[in-house]
Image 1 (cartoon, rainbow over the protein chains, first blue to last red):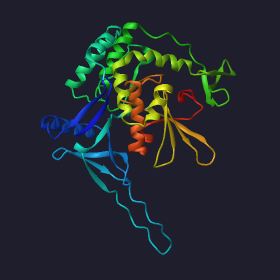
Image 2: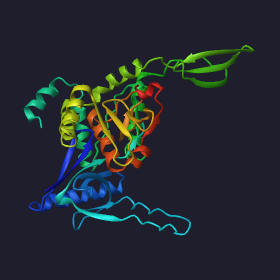
Image 3: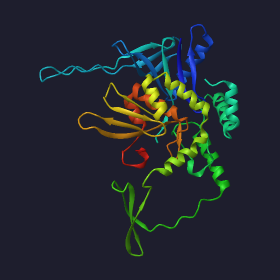
Image 4: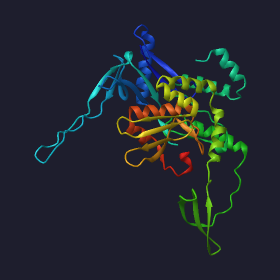
Amino acid sequence: MGEIGILNVGAGDTKLVFDPNKPEDSARAARIVRDMIQRGFAILVEVDDGKGGKTFARATDFREDTYEYIIADDPAKAPETDAETPAVPTRRRRRVVPATDTRGVAVARSAGG
Amino acid sequence: MPDQQGVELLEQFDNWAELRNKLREVAVRHSEWAGIPMPLFDRDLSLVMEPKYPLTEVIKVVEQVHHEEDGPPDDRIDPATLRNTFWSSRDRCWVHIQEQDGKIVWFRSGDFNHVALMLATLQASKAWGIEQERNAIDLLATLVRHHQFKQYLLTGMLLESSKRSGVFYLFRRLRPTIAMSFKGRPRVLCTLCMHPIGYYSDSWAGAMAPTDDVIAHLMLMRGDEHMFWRRCNQHPSWVKQSGI
């Protein structure tokens, strides 16, 4: 079961749950996550760091039909180049993370301070 | 999570609880997922909102109405022609040079310490409920290690470094986050100030409970450090807004 906490003025934080046994709750949560992304919320989701541990990454999109976050990975480090070896352009890779398997925090757009 | 009876008991002593709860209900009805910040009806603590927040104009109107009921602000003395203004790092204040009756005069303005900011922040605490702060602390507990959580509970601060950049961040309750580098000579890079939705002017108080602001800083740093720096106002360590 995955969940996401939305930092909230009136509640401290409110929780959305992605539970395969509760399809209505999951559908509602999916709608809200999609809406938040469109409104500019930052959705920070826990992901594998590739070294056996966990880290957080920002979801740039969300698939409502499959309940998956789309994470844009950092671009792969460019190889060392010299005068004879041209630089290889890198492309930002995207990763898919199931919302039912992870947790996250949603942060609204901000005013400075 | 505090039980409902406990919350109701707390709210009996909180004159702002009813308004806070009503705003929460309205926010849910209107799909404002981060909630609606509470105007404090205080000219010195007006809300500074995130520019695209949909209810910004409504809140401005509400605050404006209240200010009009208070009456016009005090008259200000007509200033002479201002020639120049600069920041004095030594005295931690602004120095103004102006012309008066054909003579050049100068004076200092701004506070030498940040007691006024502290008092304004204390005033703004009306906006938050104990329940909201408690929920935020419960969430923070799931996001940091035990020693960080203990440090935060006991000191109001926690330290974490970015695996990406190597920058150390001292996250503080009700103060901007301090970004530090320990590569070579240890130094403060700057302080980072940011509040989701909005904050109360001339204070360190955000619209959300204090620990929610800390969580916002921590999570943005972890998940998208570039966005964290982009969204923050960056204050040098020597100005009072830095809280140092």
